[in-house]
Amino acid sequence: MRQFIYRKLVRDDILTQMQSMGANPKYRTLNDQEYLSELHKKIIEEASEIKLDDNEKLLSELADLQEVIDCMIVALGKTRRQLQDSRNKKTAKFGSFNNRVFIDTVAMPDDYPWIKYLESNAERYPEIHGNPKA
Image (tube, rainbow, N blue to C red; front, side):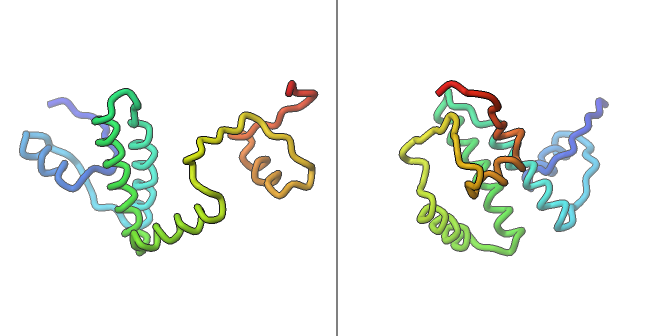
């Protein structure tokens, strides 16, 4: 029998399906902190599987992503309503993505409030040094 390292959170029925097909998975039940950590990894995994070339597959992957989000909400002791309220507040403050605005670069004064955030995430927002072309 071949053996593989799996190391990932799976949907509830996957274990039973594996066993019914003759597989012998070594598994355990995660504690609360491990569960949240694995849900976080699962969000990244599911998001990375989204492909834009097939609308049916895209819808299926978005459904997977929504399932993980819903599980994380419950694991945090929150509700979908609370998530929606949080979303509404953020949308009221910053808007949505409907206008498709994409910022390539931004020049801002030294005392601009977002500078510290950008500096603390330099790998995502590298600073351009010298005289950048406009």
